[in-house]
Length: 359
Image (cartoon, rainbow, N blue to C red; front, side, top):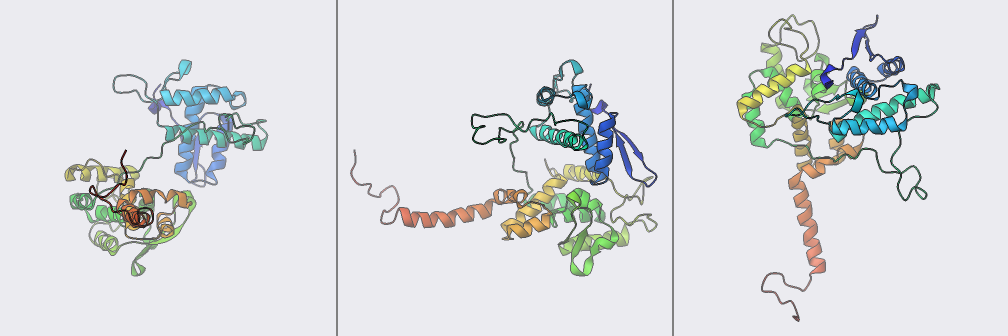
């Protein structure tokens, strides 16, 4: 079985809310609970992860044991699910291919949250998801074992100024230029750009209101005047006057003309522009990373970058300290000069310098 063969049932309740089901009664109850506190995309992602888990484990929730969870982790990493079949996409030569450690950790987090919910309700006595693997220090440091899944945090790629210019020049509409400007000049996420409504644009203040930020957090952030100029050109010349939505960015042609632009449509626009510009990479998230990195390089305080990005924790923002190469190099050179003056005072440097007695 391939990952694409897994289906999650979707419907709408009488209030228009999203109802998601995976065919496991207790899991559907949990998803209904999530629907009241999380965004629809989060619920859908959790539903898919639970669907994968229970398809691999092939047991009802009450019969799942720690050994099943550990076997699930192995199956996800290797792409081999034993007697229950392969759930991951096949590799180029037909061999099973596992998923990344980040995906495994996310799925494990969803499963852990699900069983914590069941434990709180009294449906299970304890969660079968281990907290971690035991170590030799378990006696002195209880409950601090080795994580079940280790994830290497990789630095995201960013675009150079020349690449940003090439991408912008390859865009064909004011709408597309405005969306890219929101990401590369304002650091907005793709979902935040698509969620903008006409009333969220504070043109006079050069700020936008993010009503649907990650985790439900709202914020009011400044964005370059170039973004507002592109938006004004788009609203004046391209946006269909009879659009039945107050979303800023809508489809310009075809049967969905005037309807809100989708994430898939945005990716298609960016992919086409990237090909025309001859760029190997330029995703929406890379545009956001580019903006936040340049802000840090320009001397913006880390706490200010955190507020601009909408990060709940400043730990998520610290990655831009590593991406901002010029800033880091300048800080190092400044510190190295002090170290040189303290440690090597009175000792001239260079190949001709005296090194004292030789052996």
